[in-house]
Amino acid sequence: MIRVGCFSCFSQTNSGSNATTNLSARIDFLCDAASNSFFGQDYRSAITNLTEIIALDPKADNSYCFRGMSKYGLGDYAGAIADYDQALDINPKVGGFYCNRGQARFALKDFAEAMADYNKAIELDPKLAVAYFNRGQVERLSNNLTNAISDFTTAIRLHTDPMEFDIFWSRGDVKMRLNDFAGAVADYRKTLELNPLADVRTNLAVAEKALSALERK
Image (tube, rainbow, N blue to C red):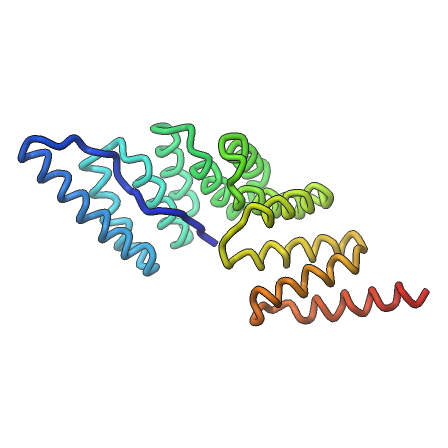
């Protein structure tokens, strides 16, 4: 899943001369086109527009980032990593760039490098909720379940968008593995409260059955 904030895909150009004004206008046009394509999931068109922006403004770190996200959307994870590397070469202080690169590395099952990127993202931006969520997924797969719970809980506290139900679902799954059936039931119910269409009813039924059996002992 790709999560983004604003779409600011080019470095600020200086105004003044007609040539600079024309360049800025062209970049503005391409940025709008890339934005529309990206959010419309037409990733190939977005890549075309972003590549032209980069040719006009080679220091456009966000353009590399969004081109990487477009490549990620097409399943080109290695290409996405290459673009995130370029963005980080230009601006190594953006936590979101590390988080996105970690996501691509996770997709390639390079969990150690993904974890390193999520750690760096959190170091740079301690309020980046998706970095905690993604790091929690690595910890879950690595069987570091207590750490996973901690990261999912932090992500829930920081998150503000409707995809928050994913975090409750993931935390519920980890609680099940820890035999915290009451906690799992609560998280699965919260998942359904946030998204009644979430495919979590079977998980909830299993957790409720396990909790009921525990309470009868």
